[in-house]
Image (cartoon, rainbow, N blue to C red):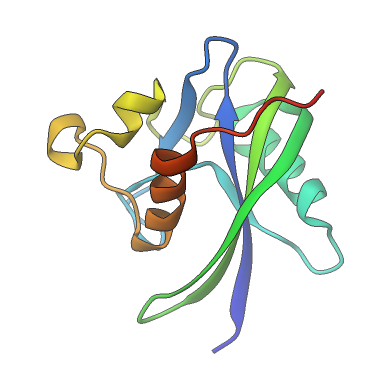
Length: 142
């Protein structure tokens, strides 16, 4: 089974809140919350894919992003390479363009137990949440 290269963004707003969205029920891991992003197309760089996906999904133009981490995860039906970026600056107003639910949360709200905040993430996102809990966000480098 071929590994799918996916970019995702930890989008940090001016108030240090983080933007997340809920996957459509019809999608792989549907109904779970995620850091927005999508597949890297053939011949596309990860940063270009990130900019394209975030504009298509949530109507923002990335003006500064930096790599945060990579995670390989094998689901029963899919293998993914999650290429995670921290987006520190963007223009536009982050909002759903595809009908998905969206939220801005503080880091503390994001990391609260799932039962307390009604946020369930795909298993592949657990290392991202763990690193956020241990290290927080990267220092802004504009």
